[in-house]
Length: 280
Figure 1 (cartoon, one colour):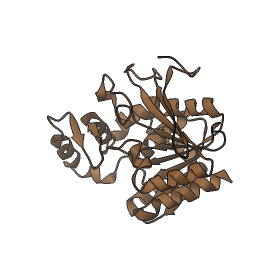
Figure 2: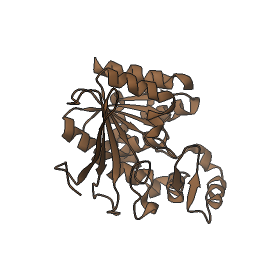
Figure 3: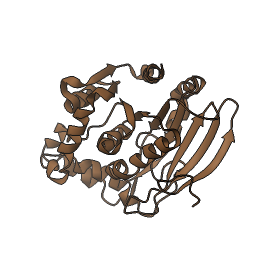
Figure 4: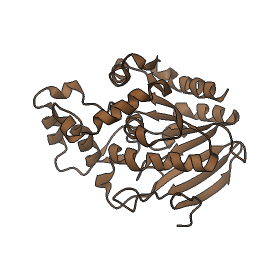
């Protein structure tokens, strides 16, 4: 792989000119994971050729890819940000979207990607532009940001949409509930959801391992992760379209939580408002 980075091998896959913006596609090979075949697709959209100024990274949810942001209700938001001169980056999780399939999909779970992939993406963006990043993430993508927060040195603001908790959910204290969920996964290697992408069963199993009364024994770094979240509380905006998301924010940041409660149809307009306020 011909490298366009001093950090790790990076290949510029394509550089195209659209009607109103430029689109560059990269493949990053950080070589941090135990699976050395992992490559991460990163798409860069920018209206100005030099692409200086504000940098925004979008991280998609489970069963999705970067198309979650460039199609549907978020598409006009991306267009408005580009028109304002904001530089937009779109990450595909490993083996999702434009990212190549890796050799060991059993390692494709959120905790692994938080530790090794997300930090590589933000480091590369910093190397390219030298500017601090606004990170926008949804669902399990937001959980990824929370889990990997200690390793992200150049993020000035986190906008987390309906974030999934990094702490165990109390409903899994009910005897047999976790076991029933695990039983439903027997004999399956992949599962489908509401989006266009399949997920390896190991992703769901890893999520279940965070649940229950004794989950903290398996995930001993939870306390350190929570301390980092508390330290960064002033740089996190919890964008919540449902009551359960507010509960997650309050569990993670207590009274420091900066919660924006919005109706689901208004989520994307709120993203634009929050990102634009950082560009002034």
